Structures are given as C-alpha cells and as structure tokens.
Image (cartoon, rainbow, N blue to C red; front, top):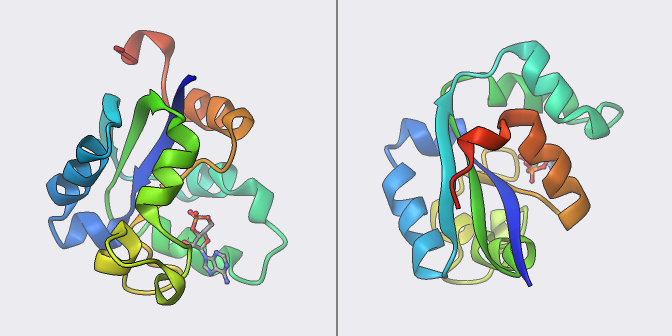
Length: 139
Ligand code: CMP
C-alpha cells in the first residue's frame, strides 16, 4: 500500500552539506518527498519528539546532538514507505549497516547517524503530525 513516513536529515548530515545526496537516495528508491522544511530544533522540541527515549542513557546526549545544528524534516511517500525508508537508511549503528545504505555511507556514529525514519505506520502518523500541518503535505 502507498504509505507516508517521517524522515529527519540530522545535524551531522546538514553540517556536511549532504541534504541533496541523501534526498537522491530516497528518490532513487522510489520515495517521493511530499513535504520538507529546514528547522533548528529547540531543546523542548527535541525532547518532545524523542520523549519515548526519555529514560534511555543516551537521551541527554541525543537531545544535545539534535539541537546542535539545522535538521531537514520531511514526509516521504511511496509503496511500503516506512519499511522501504528503513532499508534505504540501514541499521541504527553504522557499524552494522549494510553496504549502500545511507548510514553505512554517511553516518559518523550510532548517535550522529545522519537520518531518522519512523519505525511503524502508527508512529509515522504521530511523527508527521508533530512537524507538519495537512496543508503542508502535497502528494
Ligand atoms: P533514531 O532512529 O533517530 O532514534 C533514536 C536515536 O538515538 C538514534 O536514531 C540515534 O541517533 C540515537 N542513539 C544514540 N545512542 C543510541 C543507542 N545506543 N541505541 C539507539 N539509538 C541511539
């Protein structure tokens, strides 16, 4: 089925001018960028977006990292978009990511791993609504 997923190009990638290279990976995989904006997240916004990880030992460092520079938040649309995007991203830890994936090719570390993607269609709907109004998504 045609799905939508929430993607974030993280500060390590915007800092290295990789937005276009990463978007090229998405488009070549058949994912359409149907909404996109560049933001500098506040601490409160990063804490709210990653609230599910609040008790994890890496939470404080993750919030620091995600507010260290601009991000590009986007909605990707396509057949099986949630799973397709996770394939294109590769494993969370770039050391475990398959060859040819975004994280294998671009990520700096398990934290500075260049991209975020929703992990389920249910969370995709929640994460898309966190960043975008319906009128901003043009399929
Ligand atoms: P993301 O897919 O955005 O979801 C949570 C983020 O926490 C993850 O990518 C990484 O950027 C970061 N992170 C840092 N350390 C870890 C860890 N040990 N396990 C999982 N995620 C981590």
